[in-house]
Image 1 (cartoon, rainbow, N blue to C red):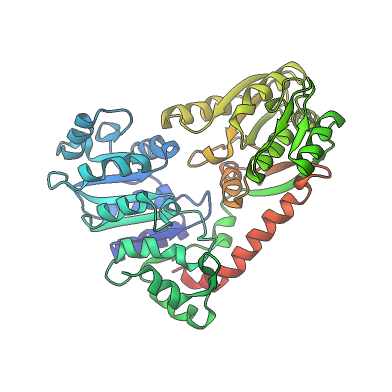
Image 2: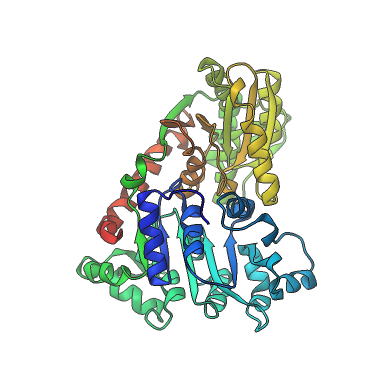
Length: 460
């Protein structure tokens, strides 16, 4: 039995999903989507439950099933590195020890043929972070479609808006009701504004003339929880620019590479970028940590800004988000040697779920020493999903991802716990592309909000 009282908006979402027998819930980061999924599991009948989620969320779901009173830990199997035969045995098992099986999206893609065998008895499936299915051309979506055809009770949860337009809703709608939403392009032509571009059809946004019809159709499938409803329960994340001035040696290389795609390095070697994409990557690396480009270059003003700002604010219990994990050793070296941080923990892609939770928990234990002992969690921006940083008051973004959703997802790790707010400090380098970075991120968010404001009434 669920041993926590759901918040009012969670209760509404649970009731919606139970009544419909399937559906999608969109709620902002920190809204407690795990509680909603488990609340449904408590109220409906099923033999076995399959949970599909990112790697970092596997143990979170496993722990919540036990901690929230849904079932004992012995009934939960977190799929990790089992052999094909062992995985098949788990999927086909009918014992209580495998009532709840938790797999990653990559494992869904690999094992879908095992999952749809007649011997498997999953009749309840949860897709967490369902925005990973929004591209109808991916193999992951096609694997989910194959699985969804077999399972009647299917529930989708996401914190991510379908930012490119209504077309990204089609995949989940198709999984929920393939006969009503059989054709992607029929859906797009009905509810999206399109234009013939040089490389095919460009989808420009919502078709205003049919948005009311779309809203009506979605009410039986989508429960949209407005951000304002959740706001009083979730700490606000405040974005701030933290400007710094790059050193002359780094900027000399930066300007030459930016203008000519070739630059001389400190030892006389030449740094050459053969394409504009490679040039952009190199420029970004120079801003994150110049030593990524050449050992003769400095650590970078951004790293020093993080150390100085943290100690000046008497909070040395910090998270550093960065798109380049190759910079982590340099970050640790500099913050340890010059700024006297003592404890370092790392979360990055490729780690198993248990280790991700362990790293976050071990870092959090230093919270009561935030003014005395420096503790740093180094986190890849793209790996920042489905774990909680309750003790984080200050997070530093040493550069950023161009897709603003990845940055927001990382910010959301700090939107947890009993605190009024958390700060997201974006390191910006004067006279570079960084200068306009936050403006671009916030503009993208405003455009997305404007596109989807017509869907606000989806919340039941």
